[in-house]
Amino acid sequence: MAKSSFEYVKKYERDDALLPNTWIVIRLDGKCFHKFSDDHNFTKPNDLRALKLMNYAAYTVMKEFNDLIIGFGQSDEYSFIFKKETSLYKRRAEKLLTTINSKFSSSYVFYWNKFFEEETLKYPPTFDGRIVLYPSEENLVDYLKWRQADVHINNLYNTTFWTLVLKGKLSPAQAEKRLCGTVSADKNEILFQEFNINYNEELEIFKRGTILLRKNLVENNTSKNVIVDVHDDMLKEKFWKEHSKILSVKPSKLNLEYTGKYTEII
Ligand code: ATP
Ligand code: ATP
Ligand code: MG
Ligand code: MG
Ligand code: MG
Ligand code: MG
Image 1: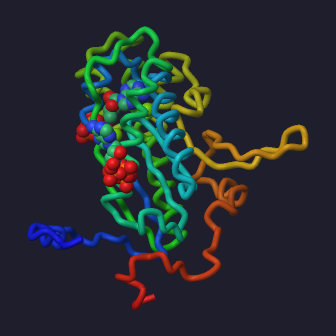
Image 2: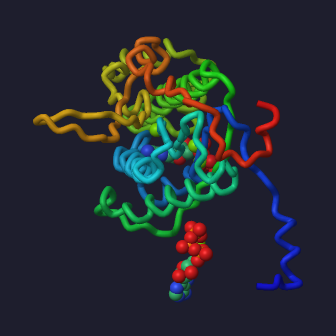
């Protein structure tokens, strides 16, 4: 069939294939969730329903995209890590980011009622997304450690802040002033001495966020592949020893499905 005279506009599209042989990390984050969480009466500092909905939306994403090896979620954000040699959508950045974000966002809305039985969704939420490439295993592990360290820092602050407000009857401004300049030990001390709260006994999901992993389960002599959620400490080397196989899936040969843009430099 003859090409139309308009077809040349296609040439304006950009080739955005991501560098081969690197880990692709996609991180999504809720837009204005400070407000969204207020508007939907999230429990402060941690609404378990909201965290579980985030995990379920992420599970829906991982179920559909087999090349995702790890998911990590906390608060209103989720990170997804592709296996290093993925050739999904020929590693086209826009295609990967928009498809993952779209599946996640629509799942968040689709499954809202499953977790928020009493709370009506008042308006459609928005998530932004970005892609980061990591060239070494060390960088990737450090990325995940960075996100998990962030959970700890925020959660200790938020737990102390909201305890001062809700149980200590301080105003938000007073609580903020009280915490200004304090280190972790001070916050643990405030919780324990003044409110008899042992921070260590807070739920793991609050302190560490959620890691989604693929596992092969053998039950009654049948094996099945499942996605599990764990709240382990990724800052400890024990975790990476236990799960060493996740990252060490090596490409058997150069994947020829890459778009060719970078194949000359490998
Ligand atoms: P931005 O659009 O820049 O991301 P934001 O308001 O979403 O702005 P974040 O830094 O992403 O800011 O923080 C998310 C906020 O959402 C938290 O500070 C908290 O107030 C709220 N939030 C998210 N998840 C929960 C939850 N499970 N329980 C209670 N509050 C939550
Ligand atoms: P891809 O994931 O590559 O986009 P696709 O199946 O979505 O695959 P498209 O080229 O985007 O393929 O075409 C969309 C298809 O969706 C149409 O070919 C048609 O079959 C169906 N479709 C979309 N909108 C309508 C509509 N309003 N009424 C009937 N069919 C529709
Ligand atoms: Mg946000
Ligand atoms: Mg949280
Ligand atoms: Mg956030
Ligand atoms: Mg289509």
